[in-house]
Image 1 (cartoon, rainbow, N blue to C red):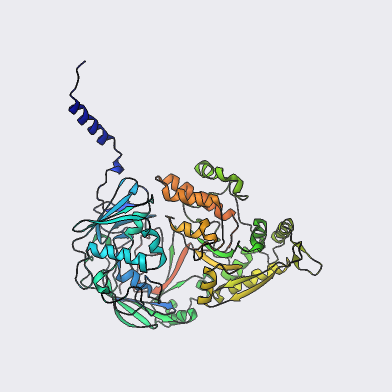
Image 2: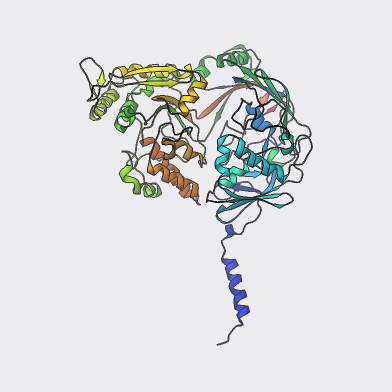
Length: 602
């Protein structure tokens, strides 16, 4: 046998090892990144798929906003900043394509590079990236922005920063973040962090609220404004990124103006009077009955329906299971049966709004009706003992024939309450074995949901349950909500096609005792914690989808919320000169749509 020299054998083994390394482990700069798989758009894409690259520039749009503002820093706890500062003035390293579940493409950064298992991420800035004052965007600005947001910004920025072990400048325009734990979403989260000009804060405390004009790198600058009255954003003619493929067909309007009002009904009146350019209508009945004013009949105002394929999220009345009265799932199930959705939907919406059948309904991530199968069942089976009925077998919300009395479902509710130890006493009051009456309070932030709560309270009275409605101001509502100081309240969770770290904030068991999370129901479900972990660590789309569908089953079968309706379309009334592309993003009327891809044309 011929013996090869050792150095030749060594070189051969090294070559084989290099060939055997998985392709994803060989880090290389890329134009974009997707949460799972590869981004849909190629490196030479011309524009975002839902943008019109030939859209004309010019015109203006005027929005009506409720409330006011007294700050231009949207990233701190103090003050109230206009939403437009965040979306029009400041930019991020990467930009989102809202026609994909979660994919980012280079904006301030020309490329992104990740290591094996995404243990680190490196961004390389574009050499042409500039702030509105003409100064270049530097690595120093990026590092300062990320650290300052974590140390002095709102709490969510600190959560990601704690997962970063090392930050280093790796080149004239490159910065690398190395992580101390596995989190496949973290490179994308950092890609969406805003970048601010470090030197513009010299002599100023970042955490102090002020109306000093912000210096960003975005397509707009702050123009005229009057605190709590209006603010105008003017398109920057010298915007550095106007010719980027990502921006083709975006930022078409010369002026974006926000007018502030104290009452939402006044906003609609201002729109009908022609003072505003566009109005989002969330009430299907009002859309049909009240849009017959002269501007609509003359064609000066156009009614547009924008469908979407994003998750329904969850909107409804939340049980606080930290309260003894709601700990038993049979009690919660009874109260869900007592909610006559079909009748209430007819009264409020003329029956036109669909009900959210689960937290991710209306999307590919929603649970499939019937018994769990395949990976979904395999993921949930280890938690069989702690799952509530319906998680594996299948769960459906009760429905009625729309009759006001809802006799069938109320009989079911009465039996469930009796099984849980609640009996109607001779005086007609529902009581437990200790003689305590079944009574609770529904906390409401505004009168908009009071009509629904009143209809529900009437039904509960027939079961011997006493309900008090408490409408309180925003500040008091937030204080009580954050401290979980409520029995039941109305809440909305908006969910995306790429659920991630925020799921721990929404449903994680840590929120049972930790205040200021969004686990308002106080759910403590080992299966939910495990499914969230699978969502965050899945490397394949199949595992990710299965884990999300499994989480959806745990949530809906937990009977934590009485679901009401959601909007699978947006109803936009707008001036006829405002146009949008025929191709719509999968998220529909969501972030990145209005006013970003709209244009003005006579």
